[in-house]
Structure formats: structure tokens, C-alpha cells
Image (cartoon, rainbow, N blue to C red; front, side):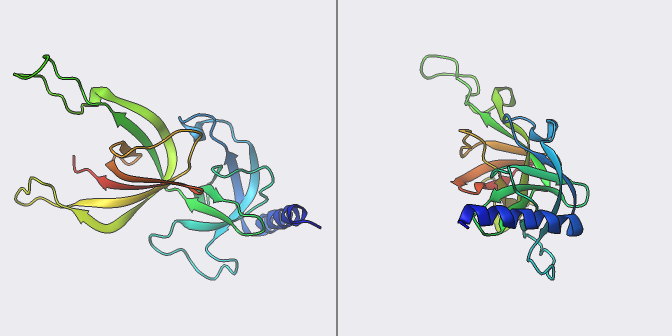
Length: 217
């Protein structure tokens, strides 16, 4: 028996365990950068998520990673599972003969890219505003499941106004999709109405890891 055959048997065993331990989840796979959960699910299956195989440890604050226990036949990295009991999670890694790594995605986010507006006038002199404007924002992906976790770091506004609070820094984890790239300076809006600006990006085998600063306005 080779590794692939053994992996298939392990996956079947996880599926049987999930029927006793888990709940029914919908399996989604993004077809475009827009609204991956607005499509028809690929299948319904039993799935359970835990922080350890012994089910002895509850998830801690700021812990987004979960072990996924389900029949992963036909699954791909980046696929999404949604259930009423467990919420939304996406598959971050599927190493052969090792636990399936999933990420708890408690938010849905939209990413926008803003192009600097062109200033009028050939050279110097009085010109229109040439910075970023809402009218120049382009949606590059919408309604994507993501994990947004606060960092300990905070940032002072350069204005330093009296009574001004610091801006919070966050780590954003989300699945990668095709050749879509996220750039420093892109804006993120979550389904709670909060807005962030991307400060740093890292594309890994487990998806995107972003550093973002929450905007106060």
C-alpha cells in the first residue's frame, strides 16, 4: 500500500468519524473573485473541527487554526466549509498523511484598489486633488471569508490631535485565488463595516497573510 492509498483510507476514516462527531457542512469552491459563498455548494458532508484530536482543548482567543476532520476526497486547498454549528472555515493545507489545516473565517471582506487621481495642468500651479478618492476605487475581490485578528501593535496618527486614539494593527488570513494578487495600499472592508489599509502582504502555500491597519474614518 502506497502513501496515496493510505491517505485515501485515512480520509474515509475521518469521514466516518465526522458523522459521529461533527455536523453537516456545505462545501464551496470559488469560481471567481466575487462572492464564493453565493454559488451552489459542491456537496453536503459531515465535518468536525478541533484544536487537537483528543477534543480536550478549546480554541483560545486569537487562535484561528483548526484541525479539519472530514472526508477530504475531492477537496482542494482554498475550499470553504460552512455549517450552522461550526461557522465558516477554509482549507489552508492538506499535507499527505497529516491533519488537514483549516482556518476559522469569522468575517467576509471586500478588497479595493485605489488609483491616484490625475492632477489637472501640465506642470505646476493650482491643480485639482491628485490623491486617492472613493470614486477611483476598484473592487478586486468581494465577500471573501477571512480571519481578522488584532495584533498588539498600534499606530499613532501623524496628526497627533488631542484626545486622538491609536490605530489598531491586524493580521488578516484569507484563501488565495488564481493569479489574484493583493498589494500594499489596498483597502479592506469587512462585513461589520470596519475599514483597513493593507501595510504588508505575504502569499504562502496556505493562502494570504496580510498585515493591515484599521482606519478610524
